[in-house]
Amino acid sequence: MDSSPCMYTASAYIKRSYCPMQYTSVKPLGDRVLVKIKETEEKTEGGILLPTTAQSKPQGGEVVAVGEGKTIGNTKLESSVKTGAQVIYSKYAGTEVEFNGANHLLLKEDDIVGLLETDDIKDLKPLNDRVFIKVSEAEEKTAGGLLLTEASKEKPSIGTVIAVGPGTLDEEGNLKPLSVSPGNTVLYSKYAGNDFKGNDGSNYIALRASDVMAVLS
Image (cartoon, rainbow, N blue to C red; front, side, top):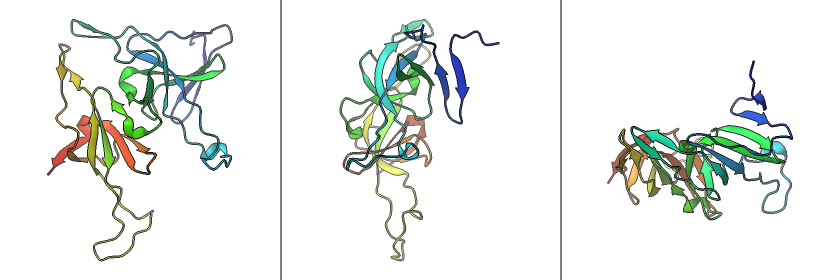
C-alpha cells in the first residue's frame, strides 16, 4: 500500500495529487522543481467566457522551490533555474499537486523548456538542449494553384531558429554546445516538441536539438 500522505488520481496524461490541509509545503528532491501553475484564461480577449473544455491548459508558471540538484560523474550540479523564475514546461510533464489552495506542478528540471520573462512566447530563452524555432508559414495553395483548407494544409517542419539553450552536459559534467545557431533555417521532426502561438499570430515550436534533422541553406 502507498504510504504517501497525498492521495492520487490518474488521468490520460497527468497524475494529480491532493495533499491534506495539514501539509502546507512541498520540498523537491534531487533535480526536481516545484512550479506554481499559471491560472487558465477563463475569458477571450473580447471578454467572452470560455467553457472549461475550451480553456487551454497552461504550460507556464513560477518556480517556488528547487531541489538540491543532480550529480553527473563526480560533479555536483545545482539547478539552472532559481526560485521566482517564470518558466515554460513540457505539456504533459510532471505530477500536479494541489495545496494551499493553488495548483502546483512537481517536475524534473529537464522538463522545463525555457524561461519567459514577458507575456510573449517569442521572448522564450531555451534551457539545456532545447531549440526555439519560428515555424515557416504553411503552404496556402497546391503546386497547381488550388487553395488549401485549414484541415488539408500540411503541417510545416521547417523554420528559423530564434534561440538555443546552452547545450548538454557530458558524463564528466562538461558543457557541449548545440550544433545549431540562431538564424539557421532547419528541418525538424514533424511531431516533436511543444507548439506555441505568439502575440503576433506567428507559430513557434520548442524542441530538443536531437529532433533537428538538418540545417538548410
